[in-house]
Image 1 (cartoon, helix red, strand yellow):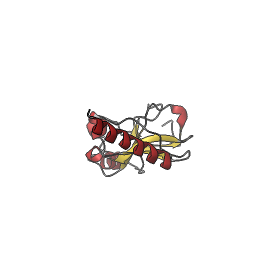
Image 2 (tube, helix red, strand yellow):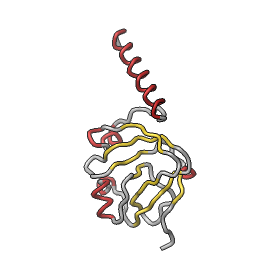
Image 3 (tube, helix red, strand yellow):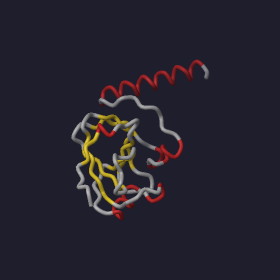
Image 4 (cartoon, helix red, strand yellow):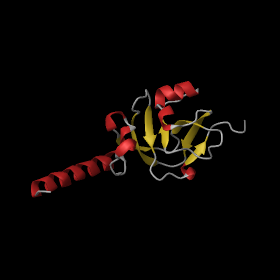
Length: 139
């Protein structure tokens, strides 16, 4: 890297860190490959979601915790989940629509779903303790 490129990269990183601090979002590493491509145009931002925020996910009955990708738009059926989140290509089951609620503030990647009509958030190193399941169980 040439000195002027290094300086430009350092300035960009400083601007991104300042923007993240201003919005309350923590700096997260850049996404690559199919994970980045799961966002429309590989375009996403980071966003800190507050405790109490609800997320939606189509899952199998046996799921014990949310997966890494969570929807921000409520869906009621597997067909709605497919239209919003383009989940069939990833092999995700659609047996039940679940609602999860954050129990603490969490910074995630956020953006429009590639090939879908909804928006998604992507967790980094999530733990089930960050969520409570607001969905009925035991069917």
